[in-house]
Length: 333
Image (cartoon, rainbow, N blue to C red; front, top):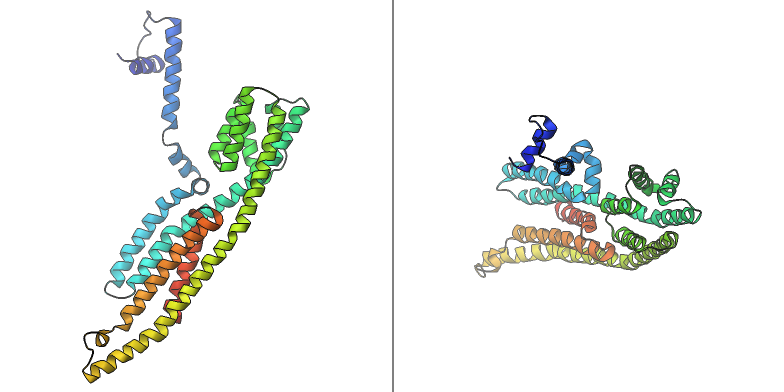
């Protein structure tokens, strides 16, 4: 009989205890059984949390939104292709399939970004308050319990979660690590690592918390300044896209019809039938539309990476530019 069977027999009362087992062995078996049960309960945690609160789960893990948007887009693509096969409307189906894939993740990425940004704004205030209460003689769990009754904006819920965890015996360091796992931004991860390493090394915790608060505030100020300076590149990306769109729009509306007229004239005169006479304006207009849509999509990703430091945050720019290109070629040109 292996260890797992012994554990199940002991705790399910399906067999008598072996009298040869000592108290220490029974205690070890009990600990292993508890550990086994914890691992079993930990399986599919994300799936359970999703069914419990899908919106909160998707806002916490925006990348999981693709598991919802991709199947919906695939169904739309199949139905659209069946309805428009053999026509130029296939292009519209492809464009809106891509938009359907990236729009829900774009929304959730943006919501998470705004939430984490607000949490980072209040983090220095929270650490400074904990530092002051620690200096006043309160223990860290008691200090967190006290500040949990205050208002820290988007950080309030996280502070209350840390207070609840510490009320069950979780240490201050472990509560901070759990908080960092829930909100793994560079500033929060850096701050939590700094506090925990300094706390384990010993010393005045209040001074460490104050230093961490000051560091988090300065990093946030530098990040805000960098974002303000880099925002000009978002504007440049939009301007470049509009210039490109204007150029290909002018080519489509003026050059292509002129070449088509020249081709028809050459064909009527019996000359140039192999080159100019074979010029198809609809084909070139469609090619220009493809170019504009692809340029808009890629320019949006570049704008997000350069201006906001993340390709995922550039999805909203891709949606805007792609829609502009589609509207121009569908209703204007």
